[in-house]
Structure formats: structure tokens, C-alpha cells
Amino acid sequence: MITEKIAFVFPGQGAQRVGMARDLYDEYQVVRHTFEQVSDISHKNVAQACFSGPKEILNKPEMISLGTFAHSVSIAKIIETHFGDTPLYNIGYAVTGHSMGQYSALHCAGSLTMKDAVVLLSARSTYMSMAGQDGGGMACIIGLDKGTIEKVLLAASGHGFAAISNHNARDQFIISGQNDALDVVVARARAMGAKMARRLNVSVPAHCALMQNAEYLLRARLENIDVKSPKTNWFSNQTANVMSNPQDVKDALADQMTHGVRWLEIMEKFPEYNITCAYELGPGKVLSGLINRANVGCQAYVTDNLKNVRAMLAELENKISR
Image (cartoon, rainbow, N blue to C red; front, side):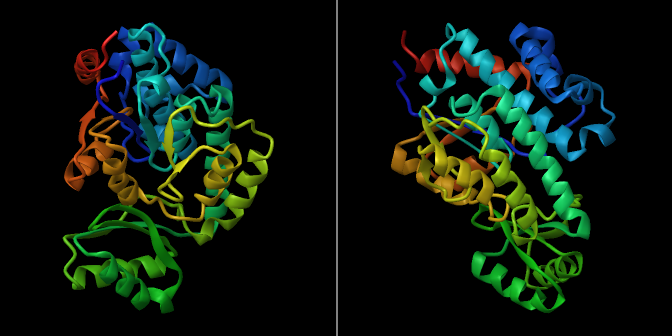
């Protein structure tokens, strides 16, 4: 019996680093098996890219997705094995991911098979790269409210397309768009008092209308994928609501290509579901940091290395009475 409502959250691109998951790979057979599965399905040496790089290889969009997925799912498998092969969806009251982390969450919720999740992530990366060939990128703005961000975007409208692609915190936004428009957004945001406003080292304008062709291709690909109803609460990035209908899940994954990630709204739903604890499964600590700063009554923990995974397992022992 689980004594606390726990959410497992899965990071997206951006938290990867050369050496990620190496200590877990050396310690746990289930991690080695997971990386082998992802490599076999994708025909890519994912472990080598994650452990040895070079970063130019790891930072390719497809490899980032596959490496982050393998790292995240590996930690989930450690938990499941530790608790007698109990599925993660029977431990977590909810799961969600940020951008491509949605696929990690859906696999761990019993909605996507390992093979389908890996195939979709590879295809998704390819489609996004193809759609982004016309140029564009992303920028991060911190320290302005949404109303001010909308004014900034309005000022840039004469210079090309730009739109909010991630709303990560009350004052943290990612903007996607065409290069000239993004340069204006960054300059105007600084002039309006942003704590930080800078272009990101990303060549694809993700989660905005410029990804229309990628959405079309992914939607067609999803038609042939068997998506099952998630076996625990799964929060969609596209609506910020819990979804259970398989067709709705497919539509949300496709729609997400051209719509922003509503991470702040997802976090603000945690009190409604009485979620008081979250573990970020995968590289980095971005999502756990956002949750802890959001003041939504939920304490979040990082699990991206062997020390933190061991601490998590000890904490879960106290939360699960068997």
C-alpha cells in the first residue's frame, strides 16, 4: 500500500550531458538491458553516445531523445525491480513528461511499448529537423509575466513569427519562432526588465505553428501505433489535463508539435490530485527545480545519479508498506 500520492516526472531535451547514466549502467543489470533494447530498436549505439560522447553526437536531436528516454526508463526499471517487479504505474499516482519526456511517461504508464516509443521518438526528431530547415530557433525569457510577454511578442510581429512554446513557471517562458523575430523578442524583453533573455542553442522552433509539417507526419505515423489507455494518471502537455482515451493521447502527441508545453498548468493541478511528492526520473534537475519553486505543495527530488537513486529507493521504502 502506498501511503503518499507520488508523481513521476520525465525530462525532455536539454538536460543531457556526456557521462549521463554511466554509474547506473555499471551498477544495475536492468539499466544495461534497457540501453541495449533502445540501441537494438533504433540501430544506434545509445550507450556510447551517452557515456563517451562526443557531445556533438549526443546533442543531435535524435540521440538526445533516445539517450534521455533510455536514462529515464532505466531509473523506472530500477524502481520496478527493487519492488518485486511492481509496475511503476502501480507505484506512481501520476506520471507526466516535458516535451519528449511524454513518451517516457507513456511507456512507464503502460500506454506505449518500448519499441513503439523508441520508433516514435526517432521519427519525431526527424520530422522536427525537416520542418526546421527553413530556419528558426528558440529563446528563453525569465522575469516577466505572461501579459508582458504577449506585449513583447506583439512588438516582434512585424519581423516574423514568434510564439510561446513552453510556459514553465509563472515568470519563465520559452519562445519559438523565426530568427529575426526572436532577436527582436530578446532585445525587447531585456528592455522591459527581464532577468534573463537569450537565444538558446537550438536550431528548431519546436512547439509552434512552424512545425505544421512535422505534426502532419507524426499524426500519420501515430495512426499505425497501438496506444493503450495509461494505467495511471497521465497529464498531457497539450491540455494540462489527465487523459485516458487512447485516441485522445494520439491527438495530444500530434497536437503537441504545434502547441506549447503547459508545464506551469500541470504543476498547478497537483494540489487538485493531492500529489505531495514527485521524483524526476532522468538526467538533470530542471523539472524538480520548477516544481519546488512553484509552491504547489509538492516536494520534488532529483534521481539522475547512483547516489540519488539509492536515496529515492530508501524514501520509497518508507512510503510503500508491503
